[in-house]
Amino acid sequence: MLSREDYWQLNDHKLRCEELGGPRFIRLARLIREALLDATITETEELAADVVTGRVHVTFRVDRRPPETRLLYHWDYPDYARRPLSVGSFLGVTLMGMAVGQRRRVVDGDGNTREVQVLGVHPPSSFGAQFLD
Image (cartoon, rainbow, N blue to C red; front, side, top):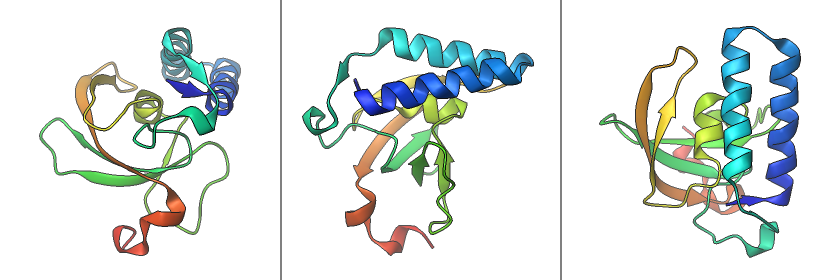
């Protein structure tokens, strides 16, 4: 499930990847296209609080690695936080629309696959600085 805003932002990421070209960007554009085609679109205020959007801190685990908490962003690099993760990345696109507890296959730029699981979703304003150090 994606908010209408995230849907259009992802579409812009896809167009930018297509313009940049090259194998990695074309793979990323295809991944974004698949995500857009599979998504149910809704208004932001109708999304459940545990759904990953383009403006949240998300805690996740890739394979059996330790959990990470990152701040998702679309275009403007959030220099006020240390652990940003671009929505326009393979992992960022995969996380979009996932809910707490969900698992999904994530493919990196080289075509390697891993599994990502969402452990928590936190709005930036209520998240607290303890996770940013």
